[in-house]
Image (tube, rainbow, N blue to C red):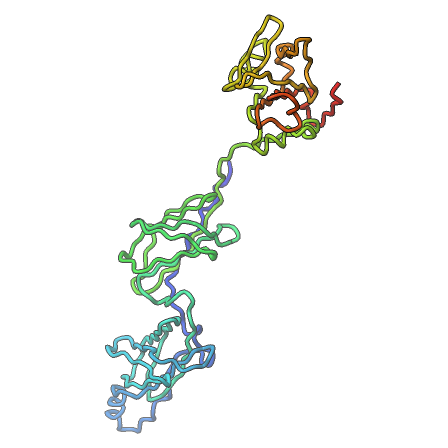
Amino acid sequence: MHAMAPKPMLSVEAAAPDFVRGLRVAATLLAVVLPCAVLPGDAGAQSDRETDHVRITARIQDIDTRADLLGAVLELSGVANRFVTGEDGRVSFDAPVGDYTLTVRKGGYATLRGDFRVIRPGDFLLRMSQWDEGDMGAPSRLVVKVVEAYGARPIEGATVMLANGTMVVTNADGRAEFRDLESQAVQLEVEMIGYASRTEPVTLHPDRTTAVEVQMTIEAVPLRPLTVEVRSQFLEANGVYRRMDQGRVMHLLTKRVIEERGSPRISDAFSRIPGLKIIRESTYRTVLMAPSNCQLSVYVDGIPFGVDIEGSVNIDQIPPDWVELAEVYWGNRTPIEYRGDACGVVLIWTRASSRPGSVSDGG
């Protein structure tokens, strides 16, 4: 028994950039100084200070340019007010002593979020980095990355669909993005030719971006078998394959078509060609006529076929089982090397001449 291959993973992450992304000077976001000493008998004063509001000043800058950021919004968990930085990147606010979650947002920058402890008045500096794909803290946003299961190579051009009909095609990085999603539970379907389709349920975080990595396994796509042809040097030299490849052959009879007729007379195979006339002048004389009622010349393996004393060619002298291919031309479609005085030509190539690598001197 063969072990069943494990199903590719579907990795889901609620993206919440921590402060390390925005900090190079400080390792944590913390406005902390030591508490004031409390004298004996001053417990009441200590209690008052613990419940007092203290003044905090924040400064927000761009992590790369060190430019002060105007309009950065700071939020403390449990505090209704929001605080917005001015042109100098600073904002001061009063906060009760205690532990909070601090969130800093600004359009075009990665959202910062972390623990924040207030003990006594102080100030702090935070630096924010620009985010190419938008604010990862934005609600109702789903980012899907489609990769190969083995090697994690991004898959470009995969179709990512939701149950509501919304469809996005992955970019060169294998990413597709959905915004303003109303439901917290979505059905994700990923399709790409050459890969097994994936359909998975995904639960979205209510106030953060949800990032999903979908791993796709390669699926064998049934293809028609290759047709391999080893070509005859003789037919190559006589331009047969060139005329076939360029679509210049006016009418072509193959060995299969000739065999399907099952007739001992080769002329019967030509009866399928529109406009061509078969004239049987006698039991021993059959000629082929173009629509203009002129007789077609016949060549066998590039050599003119015998003409009787009356100038006619009995094509039925050629056994059908000799023939591999037959080309028929008339008028301006006739290859220039075979025009001569005739209005058209029949080029018959025997099985001997069509063998791979065969060489004939025409005798």
